[in-house]
Image 1 (cartoon, one colour):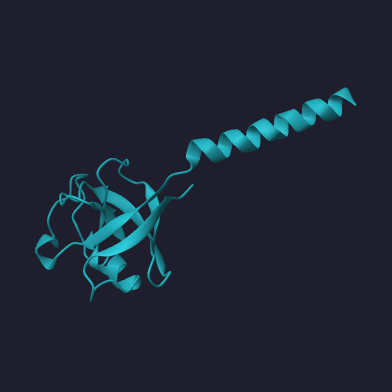
Image 2: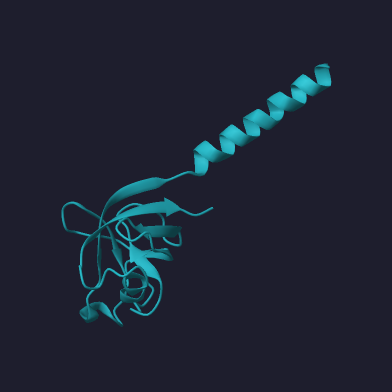
Amino acid sequence: MKVMIILLMFISCCCLGGTASSSYVQSGKASYYGDKFHGKKTASGEVFNKWDYTCAHKKLPFGTKLKVTNLKNKKSVIVKVNDRGPFVKGRIIDLSYAAAKKIDMIKDGVIKVKIEKMR
């Protein structure tokens, strides 16, 4: 019986600890990079390619993978943080053209999204 209780406590601690420490969800407005940035160096040192699934975020570490969901149509894309920004008040993420196209935001330009950190 003691072993069972200890085992249950251990499993509970593992589950709670792993979920809380690695979850990151943010909602807000997203925009996408214009063509003028294609081929230029990003803050991470990588060259920006509008056809890659990448993004700019103000604080998350370079290389972080994010799932970005268009809240209007529920389409989503996985992107990698390789730049800093956006530098427009009220926006939480800038997407590459390819990522923006995948979630059908090109026509609107700025949309409401949910971003989730991938494990």
